[in-house]
Length: 269
Image (cartoon, rainbow, N blue to C red; front, top):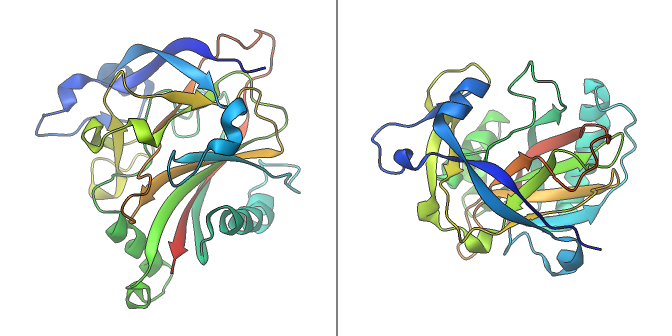
């Protein structure tokens, strides 16, 4: 049975579409000041799981049971989980190389905006120059960018619940086929206390009623959601904006969602 819901999500305010400066969001206060709630219908993608494509829709659900038992243990995550996600990414995408940049464990802890649920529709990177973004990461690994001149790049997030299935504070995504490049503008993400600079420039969509939202109801701990963030290839999904949302179909007594997301660069030769 599919469980689609009507709920509210926060979009960047329309005033930022044509302003010469960029919004800054890095706290609950700045999020409220720069975003507005919109009513949306979020469809359950369970019934169409096998029809989805990372290259077309920008998201896909796959099975993966991790060997990690404590996702709060940084050493276990970096030594075990990173390797699992690298291998899984190669299998899912066909990438020849995978570079993991970081991970975030999300809980209900409201004391840290950077690791709390992201309650606004957003992308994780600016869409302006995905090749430059990719080559900077290659260079940071002490590799020669010239060796990647003929390569293409795509950025993904992997997202997986742990401890229990995700019922409250579910993750919704926008189908990439329903979002136009003109819907997305840059902003500064300052939740990591780096201030307004090029290194923390990211992107957010503005509201468009044509956007189609999807989620996977009761996502299990042995499932991983892959989300497209950037792509240098033409005619491929470019980005898949996403947000946490209050799921009205979830019982009130279910435990808060606990999840881990990994951000990674995939290389295609």
